[in-house]
Amino acid sequence: MSIAALVTWVLAASMGAFLLTTWVAKGGLQKGTEGRESRFAPPLILGHAGLAAVGLAIWVWYLISGARALPWVALGVLVCVAALGLTMFGLWFAAGNITRGRHAHRPRHAAEDHLPPPAVLVHGMFAVTTVVLVLLTAL
Image (cartoon, rainbow, N blue to C red; front, side, top):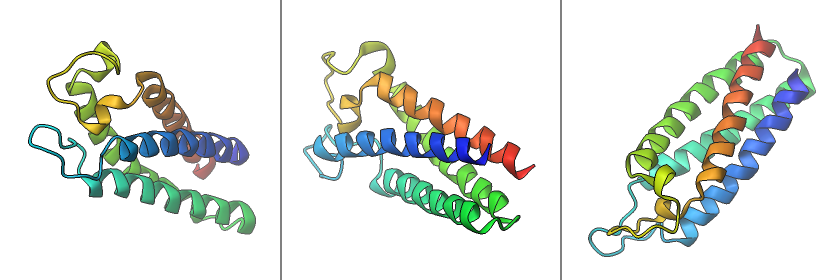
């Protein structure tokens, strides 16, 4: 189960890297004109990605060392990552991105409006699966 958690974590991280790259490429870090700024504050999205990477490193350390406390530490980090991710998903969903698609006309074209809905959903599914597998491993 611990290897399955590693696989789903790496898949979630890969999809997350794609989403982060898309967000940055579409101006997520730029201060643009009024009405075009991202709804995602850079500390929110970068904190989510950074904490996820730290958690993955802890998980790899657990797989190498076998230390019994590390799955719980990784789970604690994942809870923080999930809270940040759910915040971003809520902001993204509230803007209507899942129902309109990424090419729909909007008066506001923030960077996250360019995130493909399937990629966001697949990232979330891998993330939830990872949390469940890490919890089961810790137990």
